[in-house]
Length: 411
Image (cartoon, rainbow, N blue to C red):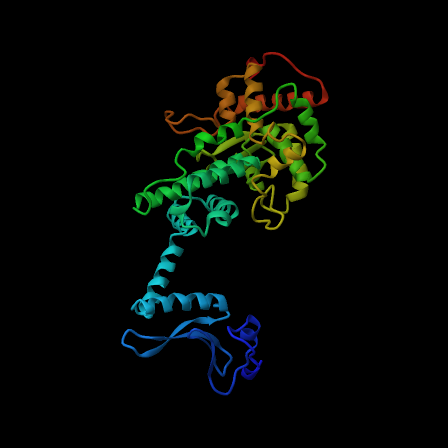
């Protein structure tokens, strides 16, 4: 579009976009002292013509086009004209507004969270750091990332966390709440916040323990085992549920496991310390059924380091809700979780007379402060026998052949 073809002002978006450069730089008046400048090389920008406090006319740039569109340029011009009418220097007020915008950008929840992440990152393994920032990017930043963190109300956090609660991702909700509470603690101890809006919210949310122990009753267990065996969707997920039921491992321990951790000849799974809750290496004896399931899984994912590689990125494990979603598809939402298999194993083994210490060692429930060096192979012989009995017991339940009796002496 040529300058001569302009029909009206303020300049329309179509006009701003279509104005062609000339051999010389020119300005087109948009209205009220705001001009649109076009250079011979095609660069476009906004300028405001204003009168200084000394009575002289001057120009003030308001930003390039199309980064600054017509409506934003007019808003900026109106603010600066108001400053000039009050005897203020528009250049000074423009700088002040820019500084305020920069400060606001640095006061967003995402900026604070990134600062916290950098500070805490030094003490985390790479996998932990990836999980933490991934959870924030997935759940929190899209909702609160661009908000000023001091302006987010406790009620808003409560509604946000309850939304995660309603999706059934309780463990993730608990972790996210913990991360965000720590982020506000950083602001509080550095004098940038007085209160922590997440303080006390856990009292009104479902606890992590409730998620951990959600499990079916003894009477419902056979039907659950049969449902898992006939899971119609992803075969690797079916095998994952089978392994959770057989080994009573934490879902994260299995989901993030690598093939190098398994020794089929020794019938052992060695979970490295960095992936254990207590940061202690842990040995898990493998029953015959667990080895069969693992070998079948190896035909699906053995070409990759991880047992459960992600669909889009094979170097990362599948989603931390993969087993929970599978149980939901089977109709067990709110009744059974991946972590709940640990509670089933604990209850079953204790009720059938196995030594409590053997059961606790299998679940890696080692008390802090025990004397001497932690023994990763504690009660390994007894646990090997116990977990083979447990695998046979579960198979019996699935087939309808329930076994009873006190087997503690056998271990």
